Figure 1 (cartoon, rainbow over the protein chains, first blue to last red):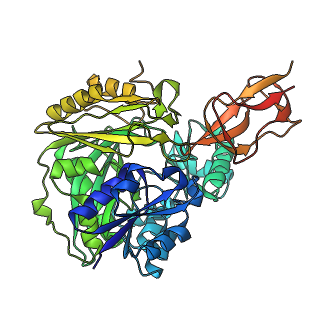
Figure 2 (cartoon, chains in turn cyan, green):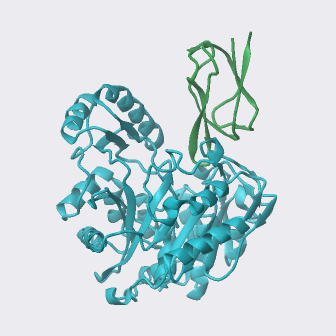
Figure 3 (cartoon, rainbow over the protein chains, first blue to last red):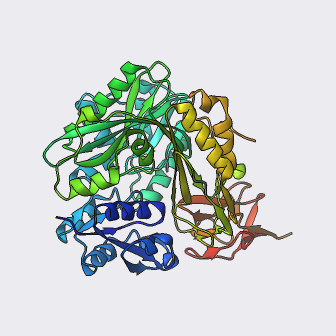
Length: 448
Length: 71
């Protein structure tokens, strides 16, 4: 039985989890760094605990301080949100050792899927298609050269311990491999403490489509349909929608089947997402699994009418999954965009500062998930996500139109944001026709 | 002529990649800033030797602050 939940996060996702706690009649505990003392998520929660100075390493990433805060506040569960410690198996383990329920999968599942090469091997063994690539990490550039010759250029180098696009490098031809290998290994070492790299064939203009899955402790497992998340910069998403447009029924069913098989193979419990790349011929390949709640979970909620965060808390408390597969159908189309404090005109450079004025839209089919308000200082220490705008409609066209209008009504002053780019994306023919791929933004398809 | 190298964004000094006295080529990173989970290099505007590094790792710098000087 869970009664009090510590939310080990900040910003919009911390507020989202606090709201779910309230719906279930649970007490919520916020944590905050010195920089976030007056943040909205702190006010929202029933109780707040200071956990250290502004740098994330000394506050939101400090396992010991957060577990200690949970125990001191009398929490019996911890929700990690996304980012920070959400995919750190040591954190999940530390919570359990302290007698706290970790709202998420087992630390084993986090650990297994966190090692990207091990995850790929495991998924391939479970019958999930994977991108052709090195079966394991490559020990040196010589082995990388041999492997790349088999896989075929262009290839992409990735950090085995990585995520978020850090340390990735596209290599067009064999001659470029030695230099790219050295750079990627150095970056991986600096960012993750491990220089290990693996390589995969680089798919040209693929789509990124992912499947939301949900399991409970008794072994029930369902999927909640897919999300199209192709519009990205630096391998991080800007626009997501559900259902994915222009997806042949056979591909949609194949994705769902593969996702369930993959999740079942690791006995997955709670909310998770399997990400796939789709090529032009309808082939799909497992990319990675996110063993946590996704930033873009609201598009699935709006499309299905189900509350994922409430269900996360219920299932973590030992309840059986409330949904049967046949009950889960897309009732509406939903689309989300992320407003970041970044300057799209300058290659998405961060734009920290103080929000001098903020106006957020409201209206039929519009949902806003915001972590900021007028006066909020957008700090250099954290992720630049300010808020998410979500629109739902009876048809995809209606949802898109509602989001486009909502974007026009947004006002953010004091920091530069991705709003101008998002407005151009929503007005574009490519988005309106649902013909998007992962390289479009970086290729300048929506430049002013 | 000495030339000042300024930070083009606000961030925390993540790494100093060129020590005082080191030769750098145009485009080489002199320091790397960390801002909003991104690592952003501050590059040498031209070839030359680093005369002075004016920041330390972990220090917060504002956009426009001088971080290093070229000979």
